[in-house]
Length: 68
Image 1 (tube, rainbow, N blue to C red):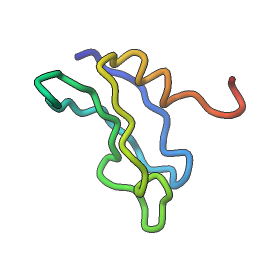
Image 2 (image 1 turned 180 degrees about the horizontal axis):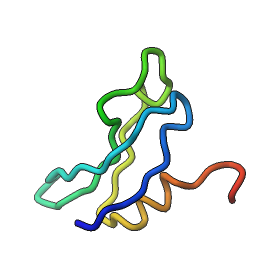
Image 3 (image 1 turned 60 degrees about the vertical axis):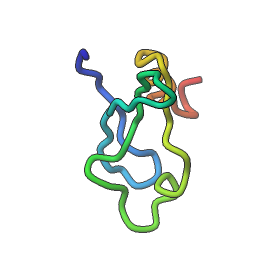
């Protein structure tokens, strides 16, 4: 997998990384905290963003309210 540049968590500022998992026999990409969200971060309580298309996942994660 190519290296992707991910923005930090918009809530706590921690670094993020991409991991792979097999869900129902399909390789899926997940964005997770590296190593963890800070105490009280809202993102830590939400479902992990995931997709079968790593490029779309990176595009989704890096999008912010001020850029569309």
